[in-house]
Image (tube, rainbow, N blue to C red; front, side, top):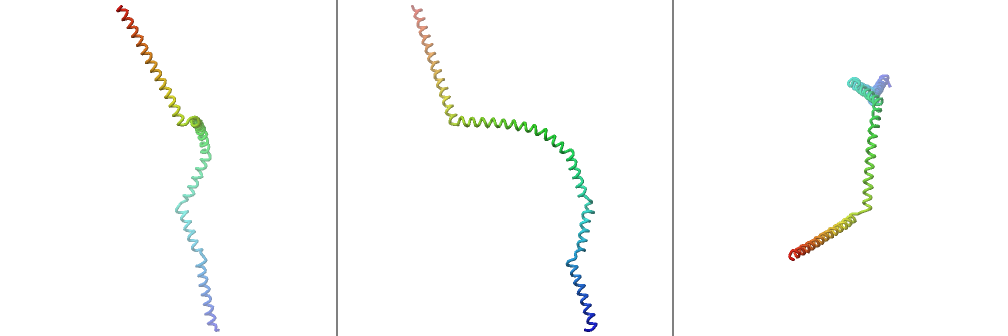
Length: 162
């Protein structure tokens, strides 16, 4: 091999090595792409938004601090006042519902619909018997009085005629 061929082979191997290096950089070295993306994200969040998220976070922290310092105490005081009243009303409602439940169970045990009908029928029959008895007493009394009056006037008429 001549020196020209060796130089040419060296030149070719240098070109091949350089081309392989360029291909490797394109495939596996992402620093240029990542630097561009990092710059874009920083620009997006720092420049365009002007720390709006940070300001919102600070306002949220301030609100939470205010609630922790004064809101919880106000809330517990209000709840204590209103829950006592609510408890009283619930207790009263519970006692009323218990009374209704007791009455329902009492009537459910004591009487049924048929029993109530029979009881009302008996009461109605007694009422009708009492009424007819009183009517008959009144009629008898009236007839007795009528008879007495006829007799009285007949006797008066006889006394006058005599």
